[in-house]
Image 1: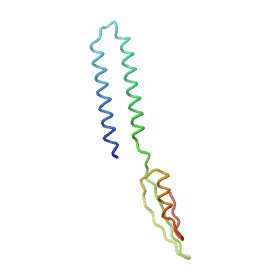
Image 2: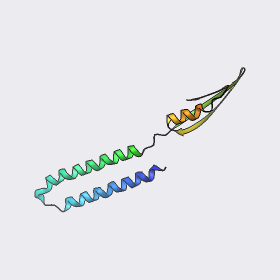
Image 3: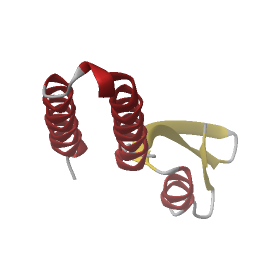
Image 4: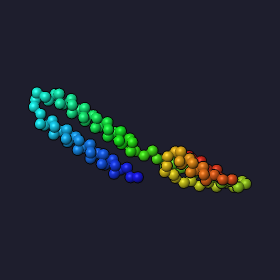
Length: 108
């Protein structure tokens, strides 16, 4: 799934709420300014915390892992590598699935 679209939508929602907060401040009197300033800062901090948590939740845990397989027949040895974009557990499982008699595969 393409998470960049979700991150862009999340950023747009945050900008929308920040604009709503700014327009609320402009419609207040000076007597209530300091009270509402604290209230607005709580909103902004809450929105920022939500944004950070959203980006962490939407970030992918997949990385590039190199799977190296070495085949040995007698004294002759040959190796080949491939790159897997997966979680560490999935990459290790896929890499070790290539191991057979005389062929040893491992994640580098």
